[in-house]
Image (tube, rainbow, N blue to C red; front, top):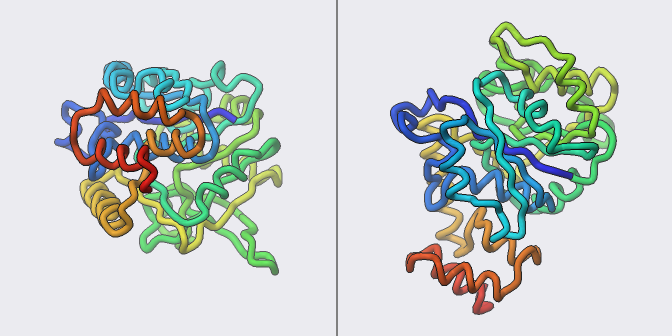
Length: 294
C-alpha cells in the first residue's frame, strides 16, 4: 500500500498564522504538523508516500522532509494548484498509486492511542473496497457525519455519510484517514463537483457504501483524534501532545524513533542523523533511545 498526505489548502481558518506559511508546517507543540500524519502512515507500514501541497509551498516541504531516505522512506511530491477537494488528491496521485492500494490522510489530523499501530497495519492490508473510521465528538457539524446502526456483535452497519450537515443524524464523524482499493481513482474521475465546487471524499465513501464495499470501524475511547485546523484545535492538540509526552516521557509522532523501532533504519543510521541535529531536547530524547533507555 502507498500513502498520500494532502497538505494543501489556504489555511484560512488559521489566518494570520498562515499568511506566509503553510499550516502543515506550523508547530504542534515540539514538532511540525506534517510529522503527525507522516507518522501515522509509517506506523501502518507504508513507506512510499506522496505529499500534495500548493506549488509555492513545495520547496518548504522538500527542505524539511527531503526524499525520506533518512527515515527509510520514499517521499515524492506533487502540486494541487487549487483547493478542488480532498478527493482530487487521488487523481493527482494516479501515477503514484499505480495498480496498488492507497491510504489518504489529511495533513492536519492527529491520531494517538493504544493498539493504534495494530489497527493501522490491519487496515493497510485491504485489497477490496474501502475502510474508514468513525469517532464520537461533541459537535460533528463541521465534519462528515455517519448515520449507522450496529450489528448484534457491536460492529458498525453504515447507512449514509453526510458532509457538514446542519442537523447531524449522529455524533459520529469520519476522521481524515481513509484506506482504498485500486478502483478509487476511476471512481473519483466519475464524480461531479459538489455545490461547493469540490470533489468530495464523502461522495467516494458513499459510493463504496452503496456498493456494499465500505467498512467502518469505531475508533473507540482508546484512541484520540485531533483536527488541528483552527486556532482552538491547534492549541488543544499542542496541549494534548505536551501533556502525554511529559507524563510518559515518550514522544508522539517522532519519525526518527518510529523508523528505528520498526527497523526502517539502523542504530548506526540514527546515530549519524543525530550528529547533524542541534543540541536540544528533541536530540537528547533520541540519544536516550539510541542508548537503550527508552
